[in-house]
Image 1 (cartoon, rainbow, N blue to C red):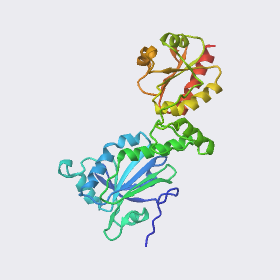
Image 2: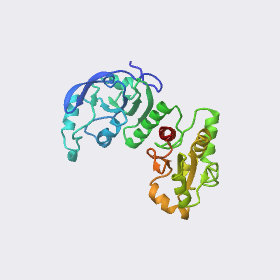
Image 3: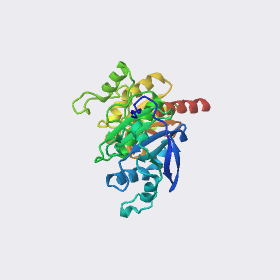
Length: 322
């Protein structure tokens, strides 16, 4: 009896098996994608109902995952010939149509058993999804009953969360979205995260970012931009959750970089509406100015590393001109 070997934190079961790729029957292996993330998702059976909705949804968004250095692979226990027939059936008649992703044919059912998705009596796979990192380690597993389909958006969100943690070392809290607040995996980091969120009933009460100077009107803003000192501008609104969450980090940067002038612009203030319309499309927005012009690209959202990089570029441009 084959025992399931796919566990979060462990190496994913390797494979080299028959698959259909670009309407050709060939072989596909996990090792064919070195240095890439892999999302392997199982489905029960060809020529059924929920399955095509999932496979088509993933396939049609394959390019989005490619841009995230990720290979999507579908798999079932059907034969490659049945896969091929299904692909060649028009979508209007219940087929898949052209596929941008490989579809594995686990005819022996050994791979489904190793991944722990095999319904032995029925001989089909549950809807299992496995997110595997470039080192071949399983980062995430979800398994549904055959009647419940999966969300491509949620698979992408989880992938981006895993990639963020791998790149930045911080952890992603509940309901994290790209650009959202993260926290350091220690007591102080957790405390800072919840302080930034603010425990004020609905989370939108109380001031934040009080260490930054708030400009009063458009004229004061223009004077700061045209001044000789490198300038960092935090465009915010009192109701903006991400603005509140990142405020302590911005205050830390102000303390760390005394050569940079930090100001904040409340886009809700009537005296600053004209400035807000010119500079802000989303919140929060951060801009970097030197000698009246932007020294580098603006940063939007909760993105600590790009903000730090922007300040370094701002200082570098100042030193170069100095």
